[in-house]
Length: 276
Image 1 (cartoon, rainbow, N blue to C red):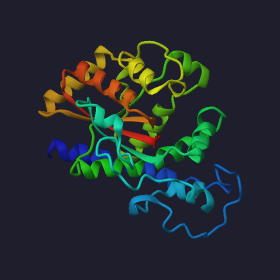
Image 2 (cartoon, rainbow, N blue to C red):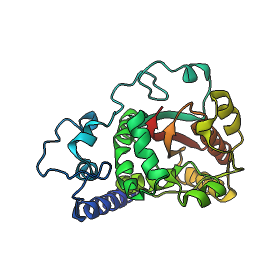
Image 3 (cartoon, rainbow, N blue to C red):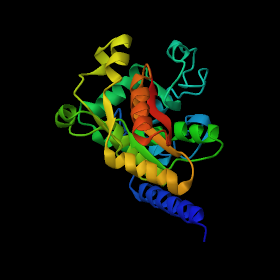
Image 4 (cartoon, rainbow, N blue to C red):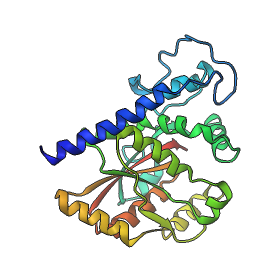
């Protein structure tokens, strides 16, 4: 049997197993975000994005009011970052290390609150739901890639200081849920060279300057990608996951580090939970 078909069958099997485990899990009686009781049989038609109906975990986790509050990224104007309006950041950048970014939702006050519940207020049970919310953006990416998928999923790393403070890396957790849905594995490709403080407190200029040398690929990951590219006779398609896309400086810096470390053997596509 052709090795490509074996790999495809293996991915589909892993994806089906992941989905069946979610379907067998009991649905919460209360909305995971607002904690109000969910009314059984409440009509949720039209509340999910892009015409994709299969987001069972999301539909089972939220009440209709919270589902209606999700600002899905339905309109794309910038072909690079997926923003719904003209993007000056992408216009200024003549070259980039990643292919394109697509985000699931607009980063409005409601989504800022949801992410804060997860990242800072101990609501780690939201992670699977947030991960499933990113699926439509991944499906859109694959459609714009001509139906091609990725060889593996990676994520934006956090510093050791942030990991000790928070106890987890939100991008890594979301990447894990996405990989499970797509039947792919997660590969840690990057590490942070230093602790840079919170990017949300920095200006656009500071973000871009800070991110340039913030990430580095380790030698093992470099060999892994180069070897895979040699075996498959093509560049390796990588899905890079993060929680928020603001100026694109973090995505660009990560993609540049991967490109540099792999000798240009990779094509990096970016999926972010929210676009600010």
